[in-house]
View 1 (cartoon, rainbow, N blue to C red):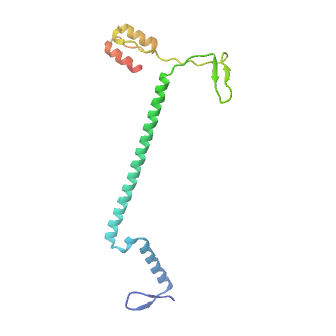
View 2 (view 1 turned 45 degrees about the horizontal axis):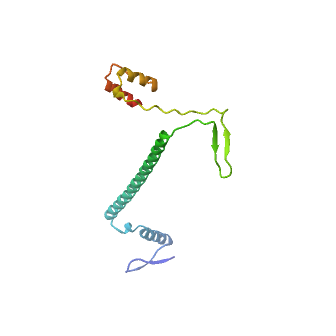
View 3 (view 1 turned 90 degrees about the vertical axis):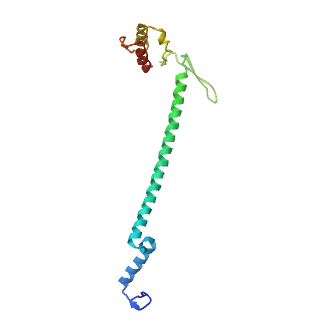
Length: 164
């Protein structure tokens, strides 16, 4: 049987089972220093530690959200720039498609190919100088929009600009 000295007074012989429990209890006290405190104080300290962990987690979530928002904003700006480039681009139909490479240019005959044409909406005229009837006809011919001539000219122009 193992021998353990408890306290300063007497030498006491304990069993192996009691010794194992004593060692486990001592190891638990080492791993969690709050176990050595009175239960009320330990409970408050645990609560404070949980609050600190919660704050760290919320700060991390906030940083990730800000980073996500920044990336979304950058992608939106890039997409807007690309859209602006495409709206400013002019497409011309040609009979030959020329592709240059690092070695020799390749020429492809496109006479028998079907080429898609891109049409841009015409620049809108000065609606204020037009009559209500002319505005309605222009909207129907160019945009396929039927306006209500019973409205005022300003209301018709406002409705038309929504479709541009």
